[in-house]
Amino acid sequence: MSTLPSDRQQEIQKLLDAAQFFALPRRAPARRGAADYQTYTISVADGARQHTIEVSDPVPPDLARLLDVLRELTER
Image (cartoon, rainbow, N blue to C red; front, top):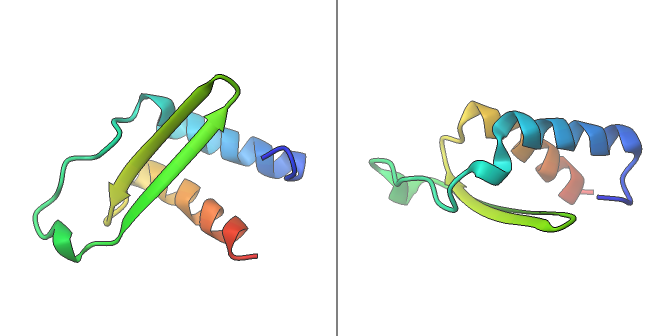
């Protein structure tokens, strides 16, 4: 993330904080019909903290914007 402009770094940090990312369980409970949903794996390393989660559609609103930003950054 250190290669990103500072405004993008701040945006991602705010999204991680708003979602309480580091407190989320590794896997969200499976929802009915989940076999048809897309699953996303998000890994974040922030200094000594590292955390990975798996989330499936429909993505909870607190993670949706974070996922949008990460997609945008990886599609460049």
